[in-house]
Length: 387
Image (cartoon, rainbow, N blue to C red; front, side):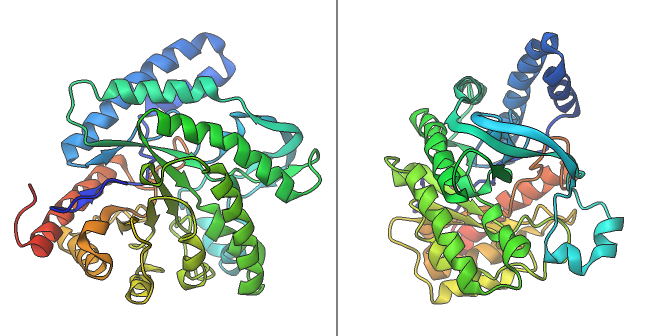
């Protein structure tokens, strides 16, 4: 992971609000083959626009906004053989203890989640990667978007094996066997991203979220054993990739809801730090988890790794003050080292195409506050303004 010895760099987690016309064209292209060319053309232009806007905002490590994906995780099911969509009773995007404890809230309020879907993924054959054309397109679009721009670094996100859209298996003998097949398939996408010269970001929101769905109120020991299996599969998918070109993002989904049954970071941080990556992007502006910065008073960041704390939230339309952003950065930098911190966001702003968590204008204001806060933090940590 790139880090600096003279200032705090800035980045974000990945998904950004897509233009409405791009979302509409993507939906049309799914059922109308004659619209695919128009969609691909608009996608290329949209990636150019979003890369330029990120640099104009002042972000250092930028991406394609994940514009070529239908959703941060389900896109990968679409890029593998062996998966089949089966009709079923509508399945809610949130079905854990949090939703059970606050049913009136979840029934009445729009919290930026997709509607219940009337189908599920089922594994009916051998899993293998089939997304070569799609990842080549994503890479080509992002590279083309940098023409004529000073772009310090590019990243591209890909899902972790444990965060693939939930599925049932009829082909493999166990969930763990299917998980390892998914890991082997994803390794091809991971390698393509790193070989293109980008930083690979692994998205793994389901890892902590599944505590609320599957384990709460089961024991932490049971949950930790479940996590260890998933991290082992991820490390297998990362085999052969250089640490310095990889980073890992973990959050609690953090839709605008109570989140009182989230697993606490103190129960899994030691396991997360065994993921073989060069940087850890963790949610740290969410008011349910912001206090967990104090864990770094006792936990040591592994040598050669960087911390990418979320210092602005994607779950509220309130724009953080740059001085608050700077405060969040500085207190962590004093614990893990100023050269080991890159300022980021809690999560993506539109994990599902067409479902932004905040208004796009607010998203850009938040990213502007992130950049401004990083400059204030640089002044405090180095005693001078950022270069």
